[in-house]
Image 1: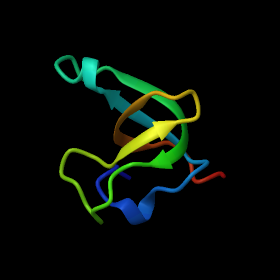
Image 2: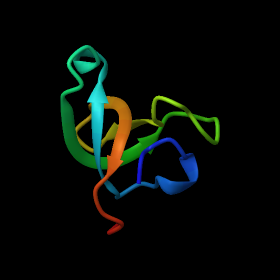
Image 3: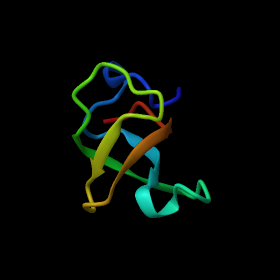
Length: 67
């Protein structure tokens, strides 16, 4: 699943995100969703989330559905 639909993302999911500083290179960072920051139901560049370690970025891939 890509990370464009807010309904697919919830706290506790393992995801790959792109941090703002990594947008030019597309480097992915893996982590666990703590908070969903995007309010709209869909975003073409990925839903913005905060990981459990505090990093913020847009979801590119949902790794697992475990939570």
